[in-house]
Image (cartoon, rainbow, N blue to C red; front, side, top):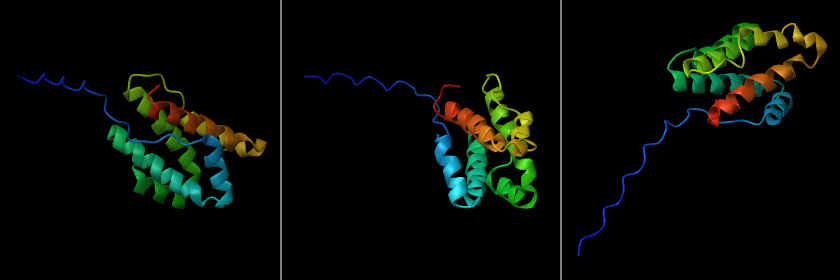
Length: 131
């Protein structure tokens, strides 16, 4: 008796380098930790972007910039997320201009929340493979 050959597994798509995060949890942790989670978020997000695309700042440089010139990070982060979409052949849902929701968007109080929702939402869609 011969055993039936086991079919080869179908090739799967490359696993994503990042993990989706709930927007509300990101906002809550940012406030509860008095901004420390924001530094962690920049590190992890840029590390994931670098692993996914092979380009960009990476986690360490992003963290350093967040400490030294944090005001530029909303622009850089949104731009890198948009570029990740472009490299994958999709339309950019966010760009450096999205950073304007933080600065001067802070003046309308909800601006930074809109920025987080836009950037983290775009990341979530990409990591879930819906990009």
